Amino acid sequence: MATVAKTPRKKKAATEVDQTGAPEAAETPVAKPKRTRKAAVEPRIRLYWGVFNQNLKRVAVFDYDDLKKAEKHCKELSKTAGDHFLQKIKETVTE
Image 1 (cartoon, rainbow, N blue to C red):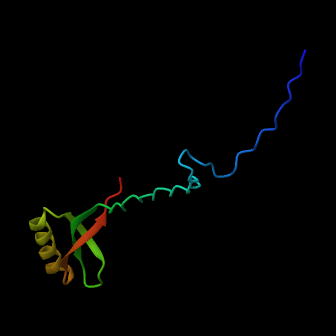
Image 2: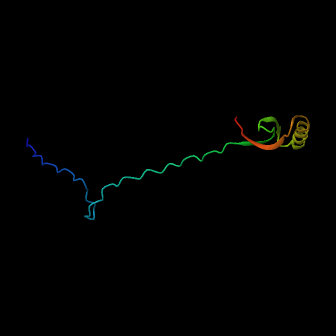
Image 3: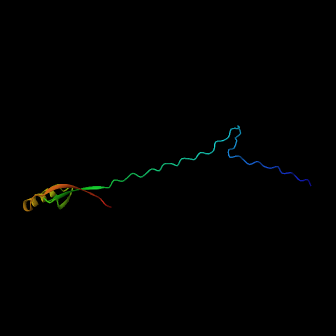
């Protein structure tokens, strides 16, 4: 029996040489995709008519559609308990 001599194998270099003889470029790190933020959701707002007295205290609140009722209530209060006025009120809707 004949023994076969083993030839030492060469280790591969960090950059391999392709078939054309030019070394391949090392892998470049891939840029992470930018995360998009969610658009801020604006809170829902509802309008009301508020009846206020001279001290700026809210006496009554009416839906925005009930302007005639609010004006009538304001006039009745102005006759008996001093001056009252109407003003729009914006309130956020909580679900």
